[in-house]
Each structure stands twice: as C-alpha cells, then as structure tokens.
Image (spheres, rainbow, N blue to C red):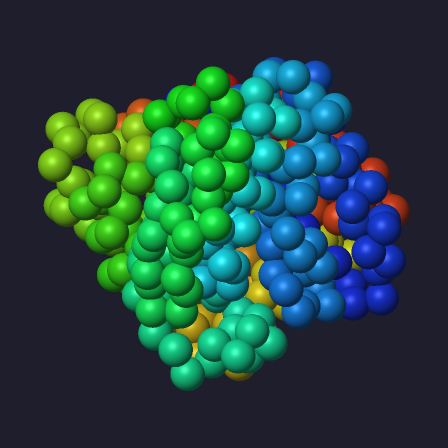
Length: 344
C-alpha cells in the first residue's frame, strides 16, 4: 500500500484564489520531497469554497516542479469538453509529465457546475461514457457522439500531417483511469470494476459506505480479489498530534480546518440531498467528524491504518486529504507526521 495526497482543500469563501494555488503548489513540492507516490487534484467550476477549476491545469503546472510523483485529476468531467479538444489537452499534460498522468474522469458532481454548462437536464453519466478518448488514433477519423461529430477526414492530409492528434507520452497504452465513489451503490464503482479502472473512495464516506464500495467493486470485477483491491484507493482526512490527549480537543475546536471542511461539504451535499454518505440520519456534526477523520497520536493513527489493511487488504493507496494552512501550528504539523511516520 502506498501513501498519496488528495488536494481538495475547502477554504473560507473569502480566501484569495492565488493563495489556494500557492498552497497547492507547496503541498505538491513537499509530497515529492517526501517520496509520496501520487497526488490528486480536485476541481469544481463554480464554487467559492473549492476554487480550483481545472485539475488538468494543475497537473500541467505540477509536472514542471516535480520529477517522480504521479499526478492525478479528480475529476476531469468529460461531458464538459469537446472530445477533440480534451484529447489534445490530455496528451499534452501526459507528455509534459513524461507519462505520470493518472486520468480521473467524472460527469460533474456539483449541480451548479452542470447548470453553468447547460447540462442540468442531461443524463450526464451517459454523456461522459460516450465521450471516447481519441489520442491513441493513428489515422484520420470520424466519430459521432450525442453532442459532437469529431472528423478530420474531409480536410486532413496524411502527407502534410493534417488531421492527426498527438499521442500519450511514448505512445503508452497504460494510462490509468480513475473515478470517484461517494454514495451507496455508486454507478461509478460498477462501471470501473467492469472496465478494470480504479476508484477513489471519498473522504466523506462513513465506514459502511466504504465497505459497500469495496464489496461492489469486487463483485463486478473479473479480476482476482488481490488484483481488484489494488485498483482501490481510499481518501481520508487524517489528523495526527504528538500528544494523545490533544487530538479530539483540537479536532472539534472552532479553529479546526477539519470541522470547517466537513461542515461546509455536509451543508452543500444536504442542499443537493446527497448527504447520506456522511453518517446516520440523527448523527450530530461532532459524531460525523469523529467517525470520518482518522485521528490520534502517531501510534493511534498507525493502528487505525493497520485495521483498514486487515479489514480490506492491501488496497492501492491511502490518500491524505489536505487542509488549508492554519494559524494554529498543530493542524499544519499533521501532514508532516503522515509523510514521515505513517506506516503503510
């Protein structure tokens, strides 16, 4: 099992976008220097708390300041793009990173993002699956989806090199496809299992939902159980402190970025009637936070990580979910403890 990072920090609405981008850059460089294997970047189009608009742009920038760490989008919403344009962007980023791209795909989880794209009435899941990749084509092509006709046959010219798309780095065939998993019986889990794609289980999933995703992936996968579990990543908010008795006090403090982040997402998902992943109906916010966040001293956190491994097996990676940099040092220290001392 590997250590990974998921940068989907949820900031106060007033935070400057430039500050969020600077902190994301800093976390990426720090992860690379600590031999973290992979980092994923979240995105939303129209959200004042989660301001990163393009995870593809983030991977492009981070490819210039890193050499080894794999760079993942979570997610690039295929239904938002003309497939020809998107294929060119994906090939560009993969070549910039020298084959380190992991392509997370989706169909837009924020309803306001779909509205902004005039997709609110569409079956966006079906649209996403129909927008096929074309960056491996080695010929002039003509493909039709519900929304697009992609053709280079009429004006293309083999001798002049017109009408041909750039390929992935070194023409590689092993681009990893990933999708997120949130609520019970996620369609993403089933489609990924059938296609031998990977999943990232959201950090907002209570334990029974995590178990549901893993059971469903194994159920629908043609891979052996050992191979299938290696296609699964679990994202977690993790809070590590030096002193055992400090953890819960700071976790539930009004200054806690964990409390602020979970409260913000809970209220947003409740607005969209998708909050069932968080906890039981009558759970208080404090109970939800204590259940969702792996927390404690380093020894306690390592014990909880070991319990996850014993329960589910050697899944691909545990993704530490970043938080905004805090004025309170104890919150900022947690990620360093994870980098240096977490035992996976």
